[in-house]
Length: 351
Figure 1 (cartoon, rainbow, N blue to C red):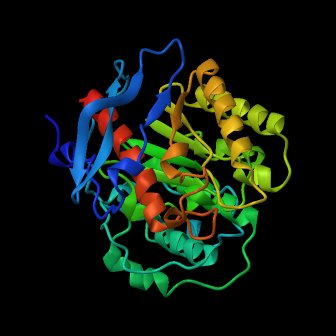
Figure 2 (figure 1 turned 90 degrees about the horizontal axis):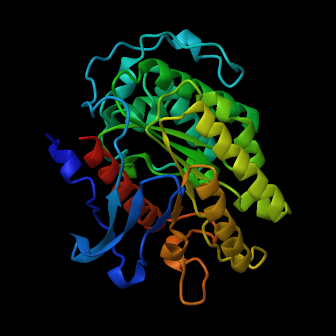
């Protein structure tokens, strides 16, 4: 029997984007797979008087347990194991981490304006025995007060993400898990917009490249995800990396994830367009075409949402970005609509 929230998982709220502006959701899968992900004409979800395209997925039998509601038991994580972060690099968290799966409120009620604020909110959540994507909004104010000002480094973020991954690995239980892997676009994905009914682990770091992502995949190797979403490459382009370098790193990323998480669906997401003159959208489209082939060859899925974000000139739609590169709340609504359709269909098949 499907839980009510699963039946409503494809719904959006407050997405003021006309249906005509959202092209078909295209997902390309490996040739050996029996997956078929494509838009079914006439199959649509109506939200806030807008029509959002939905995806028709035909999925093979998935291994593992049937979907389990999130647990409610809530033992806490010992604060001494996380109090030294960011200096702490790899010390383990205790096994009693089931509070990590405590259901979260949908609205945080606190506006984050910097990476430092986001970092220390997540650190404070860990100290209470929870992952920031699932902390109650009632507790956020007290967590917020614990935030310290400090110049953070890339290694600080790697340490924090490794701690969160370790906590999830030890506290996941029978709960289902999805992971976002990438750069700042993933890092700033609003936790309240993540599809509900499962755990989420955010492994995005601002400014990261495909090479950086490849080197830190081991941080969450002990987790048991159902789906891993990968998006990287835009910072490679900003830093002058070649197409071959980006594509070679992507192939290695997919292979590593496939080896470490053989039961998970690996979803390579298209690099998004920008409004920055120094970043060629035609080049991004070319790389995305190559990523399609890499995904097929390496046994991963390819999620093409590039055209969902473009205007008539092929640039990022201005209302979907804050600075020509990073996403606005409306931009994350568009991305969320794709994730919700995938998550709903995958869970529906598991039932």
